[in-house]
Image (cartoon, rainbow, N blue to C red; front, side, top):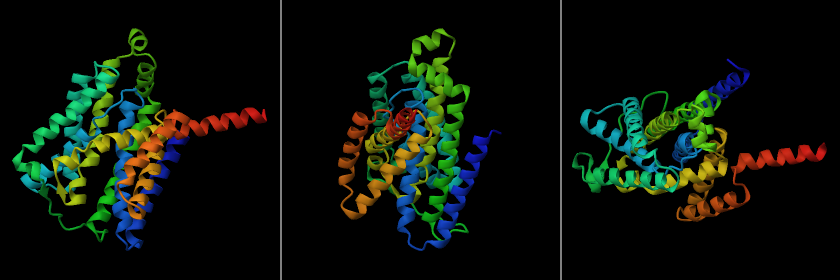
Length: 319
């Protein structure tokens, strides 16, 4: 194991230890409600970057995968009373299968045609769930939380820790892809797909693989949301705001490195939570648009790219 890997896993262990410590020493429940949302968006942004960042395929289907994760959990709870771990594992499996199917159907398209196709997938799935009475249909469904497990005193604290585990899993996966032959292949097809294919890169296979992994992580992130809200309805679960917000987080942080979506999700997620408390949650859309425009114009490579340019500029000036 390389030195960077050791540092990464030590950091991941310290992060999870800090999350557990928070659940034991903080009595106020609001930090866990807000923290859960931020962690959820970190997972979604990192998952989005695997296909949208590494491969360059702008995906507006995040809300479709998130909603499928929500309703997979709802179905299992209502059908067999499945525990949370089973809900997440099943949602990840369904997400991988959905990613495989969507990848085969849409990844032969490029540019705006692919993006439109992913929006169409969201609409089709949402319409199907809206007419599925077993999971509540258009009216939605109430979810009863089971008893919380120790060492947590509150179910939201447990969900906060579970989402932190998913953050570590998503970041570790994205990091591995970036430094492996998969990441190099995705980068090659992002630069010039035709040239990559001519040199022997299995472009379609890599794109489908990226879609499968991305879909599995997005669905897994959505699975605990039903228990978090104790309610699920199609208009919320498949809300296109998830797609737009996740895309903005990834672009603001930077898509060239696995850290970019993490930084963007933390920056934008914390800002939105603070605005929701101090002003109004309606301002979040305005702030999202302003930040996205500013970063696209002033820092098209994201915050990490901007920092890298400043470091290179200062190093060149000193030289």
